[in-house]
Structure formats: structure tokens, C-alpha cells
Image 1 (tube, rainbow, N blue to C red):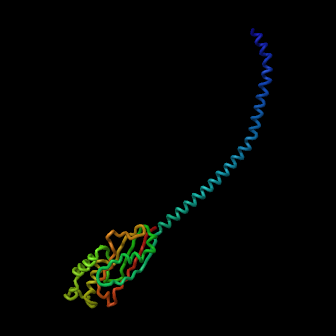
Image 2 (cartoon, one colour):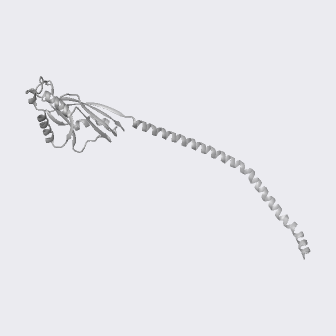
Image 3 (cartoon, rainbow, N blue to C red):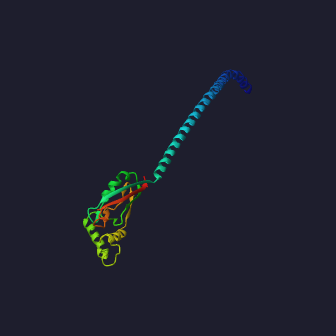
Length: 230
């Protein structure tokens, strides 16, 4: 029986091999041809990919550098303090306390929009007029403030020996004292392009003389200095 099987295998193996081997050889030849073609395409694709990535990286780097430069320039510009100065002249209608908030806002309106956070300084260039911040609604407050100042520094001191500087009239030396009491300057914060005054706060020009000094009227000069950042 074994010898018969061996004989039959000997007959069929050459036939089967004639079909299998050529088929395997054909498949191997196809694979070799594919390998030969594949490296050229792959290298080309890799080169294109490298060039694309290099260009993209260069463009991205250039864009990032440009954005960073713009950001730094913007930050540097915002960090540089801005300074503005104006001179405001106001003629007080009479001796007393006068609300001048609208006059100040009008004088600085062109520059305030450039300041997000900062400070406004007002300085009056006179020794018998002063500045202060107080009630902006009821005019009786201004009348009462003038009455209180007159009681604090009465004109009678010009005649009872209290004052020696009396050559310029009864309102002169009392005016000097009132100016020092009230102060010649104000500092008001700037916030988002506006004076950060409270709801009921207003800027006062306090005129302490009837004639404004040497009989020259009541024209008072106020220097307004703005400083801040956008």
C-alpha cells in the first residue's frame, strides 16, 4: 500500500509543481517590479513633503514673528505715558464759589479719549483764588461755603491788628489765607477717558476777592496737565 502511494505521489508532484512554481515566480517578479517603481515615487513624495513642511514652517515662523512683533509694539506703545497740557482762563462772575466742571471737560475733551487710566492735575496760577471739589447740584452749597470761609477768615482781621499785609484791601489777606486753606491745585483720576468724579462731585473755582487783585477783574488762569496710558 505504501509503495502504491509513493508511486502515485511521484506521478502527481511534477504536475502540481508545474502549476504552482510558475505562479509563485510570476508573483515574485510582480513584487520586484513594484519595489523598483516604489522608491522613485516615495522619494519624490518625501521631497515634496519636506519642501511643503519647510515652506509651511517658514511661513508659520514668519507669521508668528510678525504677530509677536506687532504685540510687542502694541504693548510698548500702550506702556508709554501720554502727556497733555492746556491752559484754561475763566472770569469769575463774582466773589464766591463757582462750578467749572463743564469748562474743564471742554478744555480737555480732545485728549481725554487717548487715556484709559491716568491723572488730571489742575493748578490755579493765583494767590487769592483756589480750587476744590464739592457738591455739584444744589447752588446753596456754594453760597454756604463762601459764608463759612468768610467766618473762618473775617475781613475784620484786616483792621484789628491781626494782619499786617493790608495795602490791597480788606479782601486781600483773607483771600490769601482762604487760598492756602482750600488749596491751589487738584488731582483727579482719569478712568476710561473721563474724569473719575463722583455722582455729586463738581470742580469749584473759589474767587476770594471782590476785585481779583489790583482791581484787574476776576480772570483766573488754570493749568491742566493730563498724564496716563491708553
